[in-house]
Image (cartoon, one colour):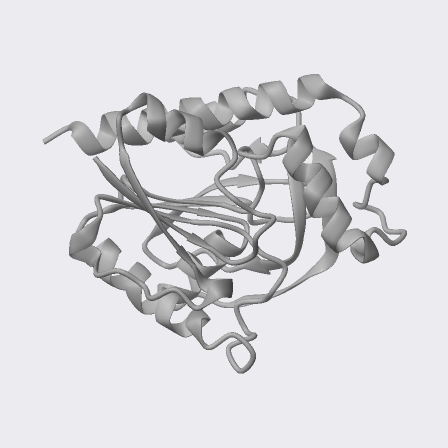
Length: 234
């Protein structure tokens, strides 16, 4: 198993995904785009993991690699790779598939509940995503659901929280991968975003309960296990 991840800023890394990949004996490589790293070819990996970052998908003029990332995402999807996008990564998947990315009605920063979008036959991912009381959000933008994708989850503060394209391309607007220390790093670098708002929690409230992180991290591992199981099926 060869996994490659795209990192946009030094303070948003793999989190517990790194431990999970190690448990699978994966060969892991990275493009640190903030350092000017070159992107791989789609043939160089089996899994592509696209991380978060404070920039917008629309910031191509200041971050030209955002357009190159989307080309790689399209190539990976066409080659039937596993693609996982988190926060900005989810927005990049949506944009790469021709869906709009734009400002949400209000920023969503903190621990808030998500719920599955009701369907006659629910995806196993939808069922997993409802298994924890709250997940960690930190975003100001949101996305449209690509035409061929299945809308998986919503929240009161943001209608589009997750989607599945085919059976192995998963976009998550929220963060299941972060540990308490990693959220502390994010707060340190982006504290100016913690203004008053209906869906913005304080630094103290976000960092105060270790069990929140434990539940979210366990869900991250369960989501990865399901992707792994699906991708291993002929």
